[in-house]
Amino acid sequence: MSYIVGVDVGGTTVKLGLFSEQGDLLEKWEIESHRETDKNVKRHRLLWDVAQTVKEKCAERGIQKEEVKGLGIGIPGAVRDDGTVVDAVNLGWGIFSVRDELSEALGFDKVAVSNDANIAALGEQWKGSGSDYDTIVMVTLGTGIGGGIVLNGKIWNGTSGAGGEIGHMKVPGDRLCNCGRRGCLERYTAAAGIVQNATELMMTREDDSVLRDAEELNPKVIFDAAKEGDPIACEAVEIFGDRMGFACANICNVINPQAIIIGGGIARGGEIILDLIEKYFRPRLMTALEGTVLRLAELGNDAGIYGAARMVMEK
Amino acid sequence: MSYIVGVDVGGTTVKLGLFSEQGDLLEKWEIESHRETDKNVKRHRLLWDVAQTVKEKCAERGIQKEEVKGLGIGIPGAVRDDGTVVDAVNLGWGIFSVRDELSEALGFDKVAVSNDANIAALGEQWKGSGSDYDTIVMVTLGTGIGGGIVLNGKIWNGTSGAGGEIGHMKVPGDRLCNCGRRGCLERYTAAAGIVQNATELMMTREDDSVLRDAEELNPKVIFDAAKEGDPIACEAVEIFGDRMGFACANICNVINPQAIIIGGGIARGGEIILDLIEKYFRPRLMTALEGTVLRLAELGNDAGIYGAARMVMEK
Image (cartoon, rainbow over all chains, first blue to last red; front, side, top):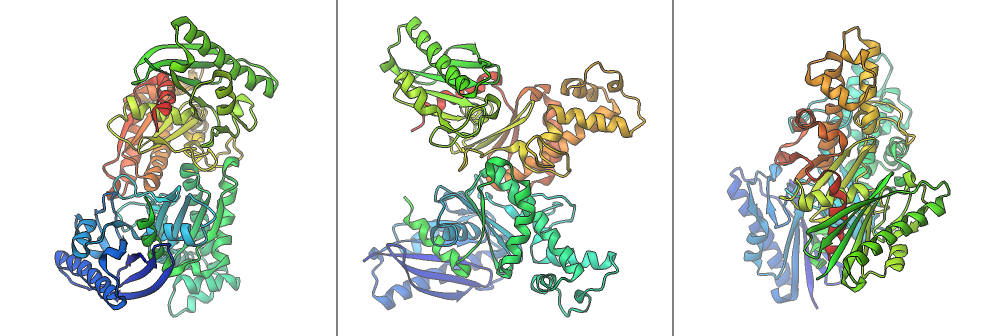
């Protein structure tokens, strides 16, 4: 029997999955991401931890390294086709080859590396709500907006590892983004952006709103209030829908995917999220694109390890 | 010796090129596009005319059909990967297989079909201003806005043949487009859109402008007046630059190409076109995309036949 390891590196935890050669998930586990302050120490420490836990898991199950077909890993940052991480800002890494470091540490035949949003997209296309299609774009709504592109069953990293940077697509509006530019999608549709939609309305409107008395404003509170018909919340989420619809239509005009998959923590709000995006997406689509499907993601936090493993199965 | 034929079908003429197997252009010529009113007659007539002129050229040069490696053809409409034309609106065609019809008529080993904007993009990537790169997006500025995407040296048609429909990307604004939607790029940046930028300003501003006395308003007149500092013309072309910069930045956030190539009749305005787009494109790019190059196309009307021939050379 032969095995594949899928790894999804996040800011606070690293998720890992052991898969059969056929792609069945046999076991999943997590380790903590170390919070070293020195960049070089941190990246080596993290990859060392990954290598260590994978070795331990193999030892525990009596798996020889020759039995492991390969390891796939997703990193939060721009990754080039050659496995070089360009700027994993959240992890504080510089430019270096994750592929080379892990190959050396583990001695597996294949180490495949991509961006965390890309492996989630590949996971959904393979085993999740995109499994009816081979060309999809996944948009992950959370603290930021991630984007992953899968063309004919393969991740498209872009030529400098910045393909699918959906969160920094421009939409109408000029809010300043952390990236230094203005009018980025995530300033209206990621967590802080949705909150800003509401707070700006609260300052300019007189309407009563439960949001005015909320202990904490976050997307869940706002979407829940919108479901109850709260006027400020309703308008705040319409802004979310409008900008998401705008960006998704533009993605379709470029890529013409079969489906756009909406995932991430905010998408767990469910049908209201999909309905709001549809409302502003569909009317902007030209006729030739009308067949494009919009769906919620299905795999949740497991999408990444599935996609990471899938990279190893690709030729 | 072995040959390749490249064909670029336009609204009024069909351009053809005879290439060596290595991709050298040996001869180019044109025929008229027939203006039949009946759709079925028209499409058969046009393909029959193409087949006929190719046969005649081969006979004239004593080329046997076994010596022809294949024919590539670009059509103004959505073309799927299988060579099916979905909606060649300008030609009045329905859904049918250009590949099958031409293969049968000519008996060549390979017939490759794509969209006219896509073959122009491939031509520029192969032999034109994109030849330093393997992943480019070409934007063709003319009566409408065409878009072609080349990923790793191959055309990306999109899943329903509508990939690279740049002209119908959404930009800020709500002008009604011929496609039935609002806020499409070409309403601000194609010929009629640029004229509308100017006419709207002429109605709302008091400024003197040479455009008020122009016999005919067209992009050339407007760009020429802008070069002379005419206030209305200057503002009209800034709107052009802003919307182009907006759309090009969004293309980069999705595809992350190495270069965007600007072509078409309007691009023959030269450096002013490139400067205007750069002005509004560069400040919208996130750091990871800053290496993206913006260039004018080089091959002019020949881009299409080059790209058509190139499709035959691909594996």
